[in-house]
Length: 169
Image (cartoon, rainbow, N blue to C red; front, side, top):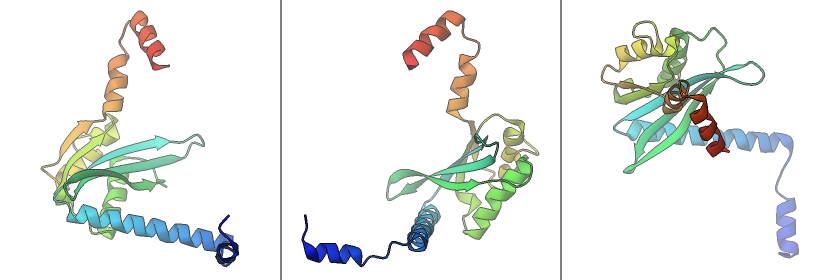
């Protein structure tokens, strides 16, 4: 389609498993560094933290960050971490704190934290919320809107639940 010159150029590109793997790793390191630099340049950022369990019963800690980049809000996955210990508020805070220290992200710029309503997340003293309040006292906490909608839908009458379930599909 493009001619023999292009075919030869494509054949000269190394595509072994190790080359592709190395390039993917290099790209991910570059993307992470870019996001971290944007967070550092932003006057503020907020995080959404969720601890979940996948289908193989592996616990995963997800941290999504929202920050200002050239007068536009951006949202990116900041941290996807499989905790090796129990998932207490202290363990979750320490995992985020270690990442922030390693990448020189300033807690003072954190203006908001969004979590689910679990005790280990929302506890005012030992939970993640209480621990973040120590390092970012002006940060506000909010309950995840997906969890709020789920909680709000629980006490609905069966007839209304049926209508809502039909409208979802």
